[in-house]
View (cartoon, rainbow, N blue to C red):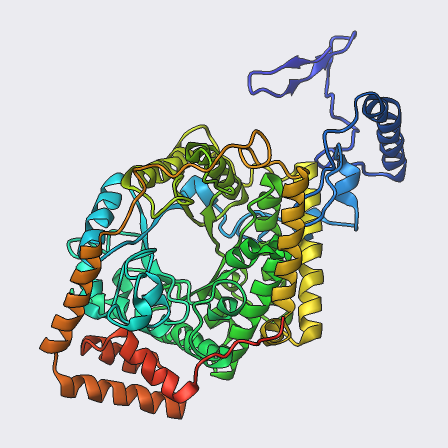
Length: 594
């Protein structure tokens, strides 16, 4: 008989003769339970077929299945997964899964992953005017936030100053109003940006402006750019189909966005000047696999522009991060991150000839959420927690999460605290981060990873056949995918085939609590007065000279960041800089075709 030795292994048995017998001698070591001969595969296939027909199908015939089991992206979820499912398509462990920090990076972008450094606990916040928001930021840092991402109000995102007529009713409503460098300094007043792992914002259509502000923020504190880290979303191409804050024609916007990447490659290579987004495209209905393909095509378009500027792939690929998203299916979420890392690595190596590991190792920022509802908002804590856990298990590098009342209003201080504590609990309790890629090797997750990768690659081929990232916008392909998916999702909700608790299952009436956060009208007035004071106090000649330099960069194609740095130093407003861009590049005109 065999006994367990003190190390937890199988100790040698003792033969009748009294000699020790090695139980493993002469036996093949099975690779993770995978059948290694045709005979073993056939035996497993027969056993699985027998179980299905005699046991599972018999029970289903008696009781029926609860519903059709399909993922949001259309993958049929089988009742059980075995080693045979993983072997479909002739996958190899070393070539397709590998090890963390090694090509193809399926299991993680770093060798140590969360055993050596946890994911970065982040807070996305912004409201009203900078002084009020600054107090929230200080509180977040006191609570343990390691990254601060600034939520900008819509006027700022769209290139309007707070005193512009187009800003009426929107100043400070869904983010903080940032009109000039004075606002940015007030926002980070009293915060040591060298002790925060990353500071940043979205700035999709105003990338050079917000990048310049963060550069000047450090300069004015006597800091070298190497002493702190800035992160931007700065992904304008997805705005034209998914968010709607676009200002310029798409090609001009892409040029300005890549100017930010180029400037960082030269001056701050450890910054993250671009995070290419899946999130908003999936939210609009495209589905996480198609949305990932659109994001990859956008990234490839940006890379093409950077290569034309004379940069090498190993210089710029490490500066591009990605913002994946899967909000409907927990295990697909894990698989999506793994598949996206593998797809990126192969694209960078095979198509672009990348040689540096950090050019092939995709780093990801994610937003944890779970289809929050207006009905019974406290339930959203559970949804958000599970959605975030999937991203933790999938190995995301930077995580920030929704607040439970976000479907109601700008998050309250209480709900923001719950969001932050959720991340900290997932990072430090219950052992979720004790081993690397803990769901790797699961027959289900490995099969899903392969299937998701195939979906992404198939959609990417379709985009490239249509003409690439620009065609996603100009031909309506992106909008078509989003519309088709949104209709499909709505039908699933209407029919009940996709349960949504308190919406279509045990439905309740929406509840907007009296504690919902609201911006005071006096805050808006104070911000408009602040803009007026800044304009009155600045040097008009210096402002005009700086704006003239922006005109010159527009005409010559020079990098837009250096003249924008001078403009924000001179206290030129976001709106004034954007007006110069519009005068040279024009304004995006959406198609009237549906």
